Length: 282
Picture 1 (tube, helix red, strand yellow):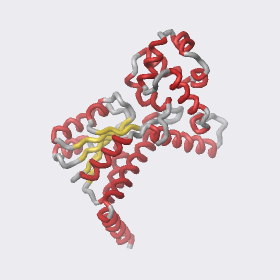
Picture 2 (cartoon, rainbow, N blue to C red):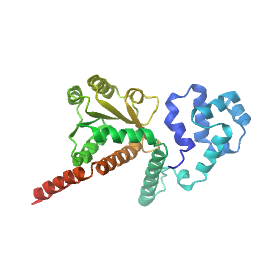
Picture 3 (cartoon, helix red, strand yellow):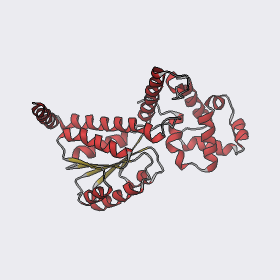
Picture 4 (cartoon, one colour):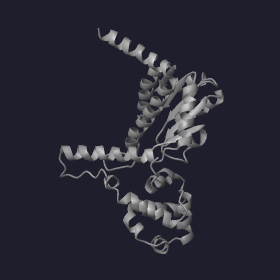
């Protein structure tokens, strides 16, 4: 397992920071090199906060102290892939723009892989494997991800569905049972319509799984199992758009694990779909 990196932890927990903690977070994200070369006293003085505030910030994001945070940050800053940002300039040609987009996507995947938690991911796989039915829910851009998830999981042989219309989502969620799993996809984790569907689903007793980017979101706090993605906002792409790459990859990883666990059942279901598609072409 790749060690979880400092800036990934900060971005993941950002919504839950206090005003003073956000000052520390912003300073680290914007000035990582200066942070590495500063003492805790110097950082506190620059930000006009107490040294104890900086120390508590380090503990809050999972480091033993200021020095441990700096060591993790230093290893991240010197890594070439993490120095690449999607800074598109007017002078860039088409290939250079494409390269920066690809490298930005690599960053998104790497950051998400670093925060992947063994326990939560294993629970997600186990729940999906045992499910009598799986339903995927998302709105807007996340609705596209939900449809892609359905497109994959229909090959597993497990009955599944995805709903894009909010009324269909509410109706479908009301029919779930304790044997089913409902997967909710939302970058912010605070989409009002989706949270309403989640509330209906929870009333049925079904298992709920969330895929989001923020620990302190309402989605994170109300689902049974949560998986997180990391993404970075850039000049030409919002954070939500960048997160889709990570969401798709998480769903890919879940699907492959389910196919591995289902063995012959999964293979037989996949072969049926392949035959059906090949006959359609004829």
